[in-house]
Image (cartoon, rainbow, N blue to C red; front, top):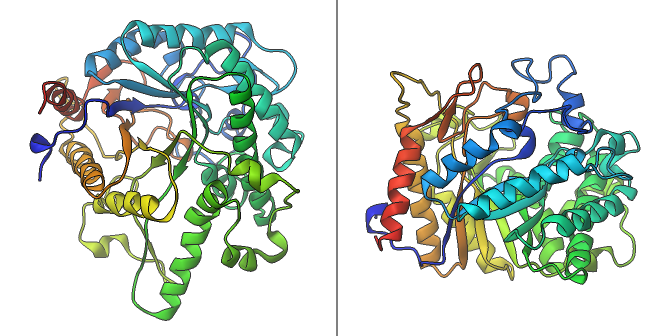
Length: 442
């Protein structure tokens, strides 16, 4: 099968995705407060190239040209996030009118160009002032998040198609609070597990509050998920695979769809398991209108030495991740089989490759192939009965790639960080042509 022969339903949503901290820049302009990522970037040695998000892609100033560029791709939708500290600088108290007005211009600009706005409330940039009070480890932050969700709904809820509460809670909890390699840089498993619970709880309570406020946008959450494969058939590898499946997938999916945490993970956590109050699990399991799935590769689990990704013989991206498109089909089919999921959207999918801009072109065959193969994987999942709502490429353009700084490029649009010049890569031209073909009926 190839994409030339694929016919997706006319209501299938095609998009591109970004996040606020990674592209906006304007880190201290127009009343924006500090985020935990502004603070984290100042710690020596935590960002690979010593960079920060102060300027990033300067999207805050270049948003109109960027929206024209998005429209030129022919996509239906643009997934973006709101910077919480830009609109409510300390996470509570006064709102920042200039920040709110920026997102109003952005949403109105998308609508004027015929592009559906898909909004994410929290793509990791918690206000630093809330972190000073304990951040997501403090149950009070749950209430502040619900207020934030309602405030954004009051200004944008009548115009956005979709609102996702959180992007990748596992990353915030584990990488931010257990491994400590992402903001806020804490290394404590018990704290990480409490953070994961508060993120899920704030999601459920925000959905309830938004619906009570009359929100018409579709509501859901975005999870980063990977199918788990054991490196060998040994009992030790299979046991480790089951546990890691519990920690990455079932720890988030079971509460959302079964109102409980997986028992095998709770037993391993022991005293590090989160404090759960009466009623919490029912709130977390509030029905969703959609669920976002971010997929990049599979996970191969070994109880001994870490699995050598080169041993698969597959193509490897610049992040050191195996290109494994059939894992996306496997994952989507499993979600459909094991949980009462709402319509699923692939909200992020893409690859980092070593791109070179030569004579005004970037010939990124690896990325083009990656995107095409994963679109084929979505089509296969749909053939197997999975209710899919859409697919969004990560990322619209090269940007600040968190702890990797500007060293890794995921964009289908090349960004020269010195001049801020945007250049469509071959992958963008391929996507543009593919979407045109879909609109013409294949």
